[in-house]
Image 1: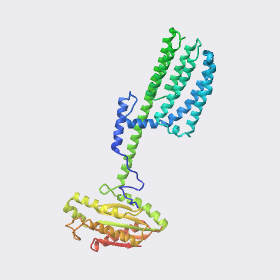
Image 2: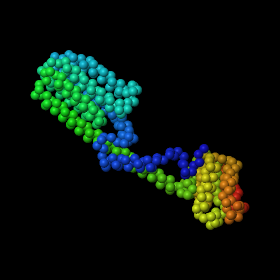
Image 3: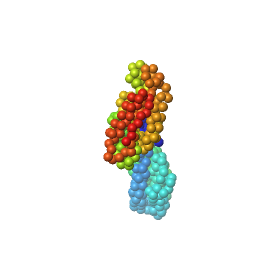
Image 4: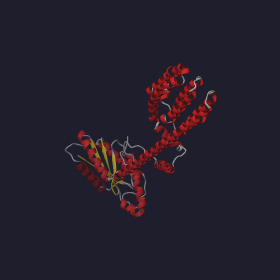
Length: 423
């Protein structure tokens, strides 16, 4: 059973940690100002960045994979023109080995039915992109090793295409792209020195072209990832600002209907909520009770013990009401000064009276000393209860007036008691 009080409204979720949000915003602002030349964020933020782009990366791998596979097989034309002596080998490797395996992988990846593929981590996706590029390079290298064509040395230009695939088409993260490029440059250099018929005068020009291709594509890769990371930070900062503004608006909205001292709803909110509660009760012709509570001789308590003690007294009385009035749909509010009010739906008259008596007894049981009270040596409360079976033709103001009259009776009869009126 939940008490509908201002301290924890029904359906409320725990508020985010403002300190954590502030620290996160400070980190993001610092990164935006200083930059991130190392292409790495702090651990937690880096993890969020990688996760944020996970689905887009999966989709990109599939889409670019099919296109790249088509381009890979179009290079059979180059095989036929440049390496006619091993064209059969190239045809077999490209169409009968690499293509079926690549298609099987791409279709499995796209369908999501293979668990380890559908749940691949950011690191796993980078590995997939890198392995696919290295596999294509291995096919090129194997074809080249088996050819004795006088144009074989020109075939090394194919490494430029593979480097472009990994660094630009698949857009591997920068440091993975660096590792990928270094591996391909190593394969290229080894291939140059291992090819007996490689023209010496073409060695440096071709190596320079492949190296330049790696440098240019890595530069583009760096710029693309830098932009992506900056967009991520700007988006997260905007979300943080929106979240902070939302929290502030929620807090302001709560403050507009909450009594700051006790944490209960204020009179304005009670009157609004009471109208809605009354409409539901009158529509269903269900019981409704209004309970007014007044702390006895509170002005004398304040004058004698001081306002801080008076505030503490009201908070303690308020806590008693929260704990005691714990029925579903109950609304408890501070009505003004030392006076409180509660709307209690769904209980019959005897149960409502018993609940009111519990509140009175629990306040007295707190044993808060009150030397200036004419009623008792401790703080007590007078309570007025009005009860009815709600009907559409009735007005809630009538029930409130009855509760006020019952409270007056309790005070007139000596205080520290419950009086009731019903209709």
